[in-house]
Image (cartoon, rainbow, N blue to C red; front, side, top):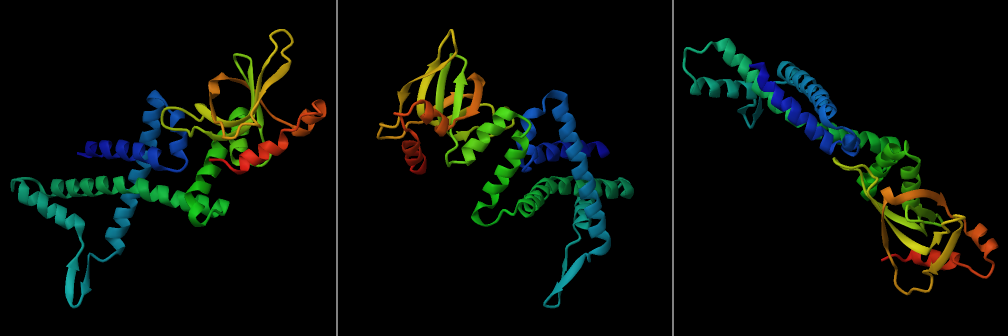
Amino acid sequence: MFLLLTLPILISGFFLCHIHPIYKYKLHRYEGQYLYLKCATLGITCLFIASASCLLINKYFPSSFFIASHAINIDIPLYIEELIKSTTAEKNNSNDIYTLTWVIVISISTLFIPPIWSFLSYIRLCIKHHAKGSKFFKDTKLFVIANILSDSPLDNLLFKSSINKDDSPLMLSLKDRKVYVGQVISLGEPNEVQGSDQEISIIPIMSGYRDKDTLKVVFNTKYDDVDEDIYLTIRQDDIVSATQFSFDSYEKLNKSVSVRKSFKKRISNPD
């Protein structure tokens, strides 16, 4: 009979992985048997929480309350037990019916734990990072993703560039020796299949290539004279190296060229 709890355990664990503010961004790291074990672990935790909650509510909360002298019965286990008795033969043992009743109650309660757990986690993250107002979920998501991406220098650099819009362009070198300088405006969020290393979008400032012999960077295209914003999407797998681009150093080496002003204008007025 208790095998009936297996399905709620796996469903609640997998559901929690999809909606929890932290676990849902780490889901791509779980594969095969590890994913099953992770879901089972979280599901068993949900089961324990649901069981403890049901027992405490059954013991300390009244089974009925009065509204305008009318008694309202909220004893759900009793309703379920009576329903089972009405649909089964009289020869069934009452102890088995009582046990089945509580298995059903706990199974259903287990499925309600993931959304409650996730909501409380959002509240905890909000308090921890002082997120508030209309940016509650957005700020919380940024803090969570920043923490997850902190173990990858490239992911961390791209993420910081995407949220720091002021004077923080990057120089990206690709596998085909092409070089782009621009501001990262978005990068793929981790999902259940892939991490953040999917594609990134940039507003390019200039582009060029690395000499095949010396690997010296040669810029041959500048986008400061283009009237409309140009967005470029690059697969993160194609990026060989990324570094912060210094306007001061570039303009010292190229005294006749100034791209800082046009860059700030384009970044401050994106479409």
